[in-house]
Image 1 (cartoon, rainbow, N blue to C red):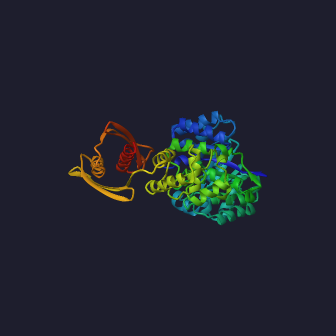
Image 2: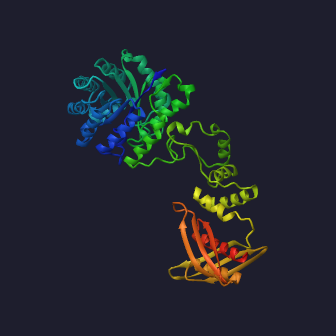
Image 3: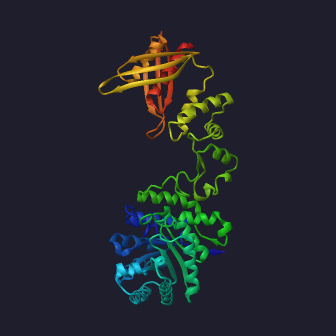
Amino acid sequence: MEKIIIFDTTLRDGEQAPGASMNSFQKMEVATQLEKLGVDIIEAGFPIASPDDFVAVSAIAKNIKRSAVCALARCIYKDIERAGESVKKAKRPRIHLFLATSKIHLKYKFKKAEDEIVSIARDSIRQARKFCSDIEFSPEDATRTEKDFLFRMVEMAISEGAATINIPDTVGYSYPQEVFSLITDIRNNVPNIDKAVIAIHCHNDLGLATANSLSAILAGARQVHCTINGIGERAGNASLEEIVMAMKTRKDVFGDFYTDIDTKEIYRTSRLVSKLTDFVVPPNKAIVGRNAFAHESGIHQDAVLKKRITYEIMDPRDVGISESSLVLGKHSGRHAFRQRLKNLGFHLDEQRLNKAFQRFKEVADRKKEIFDDDLRIIVEDEIRVVKPLWQLLSFEVSSGTQVKPEAKVMLKKRAKTLCGVSSGDGPVDACFKAIDKITNLKVKLEDFRLEAVTSGKDALGHASLKLKNKGITAAGRGSSTDIIEAAIRAYVDALNKLETR
């Protein structure tokens, strides 16, 4: 098996994403976790960019022992000198030089001829080797560079002592077959290519960074540039977690390769980078997104409960997530609902389960996700041994700062439908008075509380109250995403208890 070297550039290219910058203390925290993750090379920063970046790279170089520490430099002497100074205390130092080679860059950015670019790169590699023996060279915008010139640059860089040649798809322009052909052509047309490691550095402008990186591996690249969560300039870089887990999962394709990444540290690393950069991981992000191992569809939930591999190609524990989650929502089925209730300690017979499931579906139509606390309330509200005398059918309210609140409530008593209309001091009070007209009971409201059971704008509201009638007090509870409905349900619940005493 051949090792694929993981070159993590979260602290350099990843940090160049607008708004993602970290201070030296935060970068040290990430570097420590990257070493724990098993990254081979940490590109710690661009030392010439700022005094704090130099401090960060220097601190990382001094403290990291297992991973190599790399500093980026343009082919400018002051950059090279600063980079060399920053990694001088590293156990395994590296300087990464880059210089654009595409005609677009030569014409509009440098206004220089190809021979001049070759000369600049040659001199820079020689200068860098005075500070560090491990040199990586990147012909920037390689995928848009004319191949003959690219071959010439790569051959020269290797002859001058660059041990790693990185091929950047700087603007995310390429596609997998094209990348495969390019790496193959480099291997076939650069005479001394066997003296260097070929690396690949892909951006995600067309959403192909991971696919392009994997294609490069199949073509002969043995080092991959990537970032945690795929952060980076513009649309970001190839994602470390996606590349590593693709290789681990598709052993039928990548069985000849391995990495030293401890995949169980992936999720922890992802969350750390997200927290320090304040870049939220999208819910649908592969491997580390909240929904990556979550299932709401009833068909999927049923199959996963029977055999996980039906809808999961990876074990969540392999990336540091304790277990899959069966998200209860409007698409969920009875199997997942029953299983979640069992986990919460509710063991219901078929009749009670059906009743609770019907109520769950009603709530799920209004609420995106049902949490455990929601389920507890649903079960406690709906599971009754005796069928209630009064049942809520519907209600309507009108209210506002310049409008006297009015309510129309419809209740069912056995097979009879009754309606009450009333005004009140507020919409809830109006509903209670409308119910009193229907029942003809003179009750006194002694206590009333309303609270959110779960978080979010669509949280399930829980109402609890006490009603007193003829010296008898009964407590009622109700829940709904509509707080007025929750209050009505609690009121009707208390009335039913009074009627049965």
